[in-house]
Amino acid sequence: MAGYHVAPLEKLVEQFEQLPGIGNKTAQRLAYFVLNLPKERAQAFADAILTAHEKIHYCKVCCNLTDGELCPVCRDESRDRSVICVVEDPRDVFAFERTHEFKATYHVLHGAISPLSGIGPDQLCIKELLARVQDGTVKEVIMATNPTVEGEATAMYLSRLLKPLGIKVTRLAYGIPVGGDLEYADEVTLSRAIEGRSEM
Amino acid sequence: MAGYHVAPLEKLVEQFEQLPGIGNKTAQRLAYFVLNLPKERAQAFADAILTAHEKIHYCKVCCNLTDGELCPVCRDESRDRSVICVVEDPRDVFAFERTHEFKATYHVLHGAISPLSGIGPDQLCIKELLARVQDGTVKEVIMATNPTVEGEATAMYLSRLLKPLGIKVTRLAYGIPVGGDLEYADEVTLSRAIEGRSEM
Image 1 (cartoon, each protein chain N blue to C red):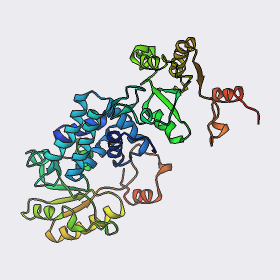
Image 2: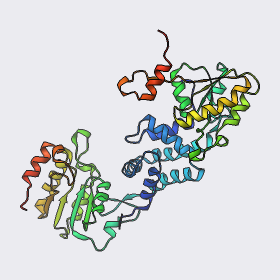
Image 3: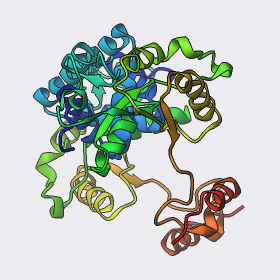
Image 4: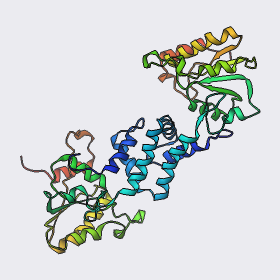
């Protein structure tokens, strides 16, 4: 803005603007909000960013995010270690954990194979997954990558690596989402739902 | 989430969640994004929050935000000091500055009178405004508070204080927004637009 510059404020706006889904107007709103916070709450915000960055790293077994050596799931003795659910993102683990139904373990790839974005198998946590299945305790690997072209390709790639090791490889069911409206379901989802129909 | 806790990550999510318009899902997305930033960019983010908090305070003339003694507008010698545009929020100053048309000065109230929220005239920067108009250089005060009940009440309150001092008090024009669609204009705006019609 010509003639109107308050450098520290603009820097803060820029910082918010780099976040995904935050445009200039929202970034301004957030910056002003943070500016109006009491000193100790602004300090807490800044500390949370730095602490998260320092303390959080990959779980050495499943590559999920954790602040300990193992993530809470891998630490949990009651989990069934013969089944691994492979997901793209740590947030997917949260999503499964919210169901309170899944009692096995996870493996976080941290992405999906995407030649267009230059992401090959080497950039993903695939060798860690292969290391886990070597000792024969793992009987089944569930592919829970996203239902996208990249997610499918990744699932296919992993399945070709795992099947020769005698591991059962499964894929999440496709179909209409519960509580969804059939009218709004896309054609691909609907035809997958018909393909995967089960007897009542 | 039962059994699934990564404290530093949750703290960061909480920090984002307190921001206006940011729900839990978005807060998670932002936290993961920040976590994936290179170390120095996360540091820059945290620094921007702290620096903005330390350096920014009210301009001692107009109560706008600044990192100097005076804000850029009050520092600017070319500004017409006989006209003051009264706004509720520092962002409103930005909005006016973007027009590149307004060459006078501002006064930021930092809110509007709102008995329901317990905000009275004493919590706003009103005494600073009254101090500015004492020496007779100010000829006109433009009320540019928001077109809300609170903004109107504030404008009315200030107008009653300023008029006895022989100062011309004006109000921004009400009417249909340029580029807007008449069909979507509300009744109040439309009737104000008719009231305020001008000859072509």
